[in-house]
Length: 245
Image (tube, rainbow, N blue to C red; front, side):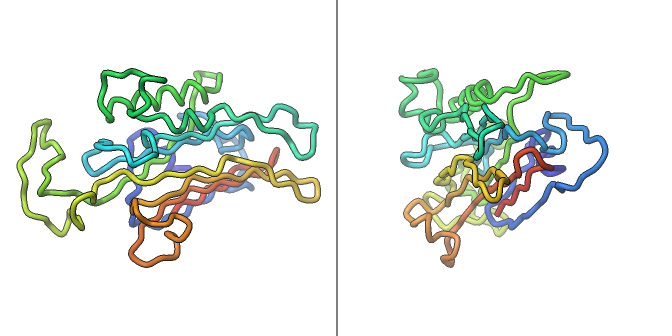
């Protein structure tokens, strides 16, 4: 939870090369306080989102057929007496697919990809917003960020001004043209798995930065990038379990 809180407050990035696993304990006792909502991650109606950035803290160009790299999974349980329970998703697939190329159907049309990503994040936030005390909140945000930077392309501003090209350095790896592209991002919407009367909520975001790869094989292939955020929670019991890699 601390990592998620730091990401929400300070925008700390997860590099694509980092393997990270963290657990929010389901056996936690006492009072939990959160600055951004959902203390202890105990709420059954999950609110989680994902965003991708390049090394410039920008979008640059959207990945093919992916839309703007902002997605959300937000749902409510409408009838807790049924078994399995029923979910209503507040963010539809067409919402998650919004991008600069279809801005004419939803969103402003006179902005660039970076500004559109900011607009989309607000748009998704409004769909996910929870009316809470002392103030509303929208979702837990996970950031994924590639560590690659094309120094020869000089696309990242320096001190707010256009930079000039400089030779590659060990601290800025780049395999060539396209090393700063946005990732492919896919989504398994949260669904319910019922077993012996226990309802478990499960879902994930996943993908790869290698645009020509088969994402179903990316996890096990050598020299292929992969990212995944998975979540699982037993309805009405404890906190959520989040795993990222």
